Amino acid sequence: MNAPERTGPVSPALSDAARYFLEAPRFAVVAVLNPDGSPLQAVVWYALEGDVIAFNSRIGRLWPTNLQRDRRLSLTVADGYEYIEMRGEVEVDQDPVRGLEFVTRLTRRYHQDQAAADAQIAVFAREHRVTFKLRPTRIFERLSGH
Image 1 (cartoon, one colour):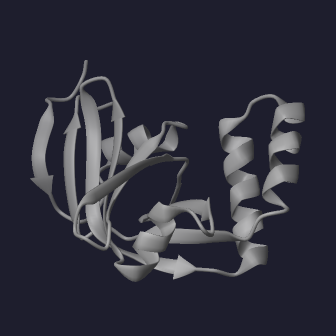
Image 2 (image 1 turned 90 degrees about the vertical axis):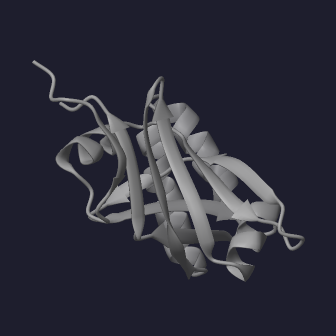
Image 3 (image 1 turned 180 degrees about the horizontal axis):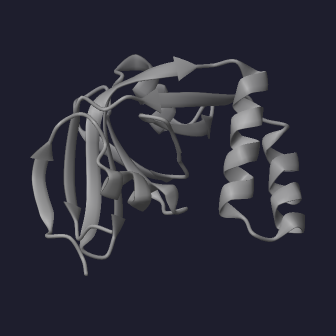
């Protein structure tokens, strides 16, 4: 039997249902601010690391450039009508070795085919990657529970 649906803002701690939901390799949408204040969204891979949501990009893209300038972020992971939205400021890690290690883990998380993963990792190895970590200060959930 499913738990009652939870909706609305909850404490900054992730619930067990939220952790279960985030452990699946779904896609996240990050919303950042352009220099003129207009919003910009991007779809990203992510990983749950304890109470932190971590994600990664190639340096030089617009959304990570914006996020390095203004670290405020809204991140949403959705599956049908169920979703989690998290808000806060990110920590930025520009170390290229850690960036490649992290995107390698993400690639293996999202690609089940080993050959496809290896090919994608080879592309990432030629890029300088930046990793962002969000420890949410606000969490909104709409989950049916598990």
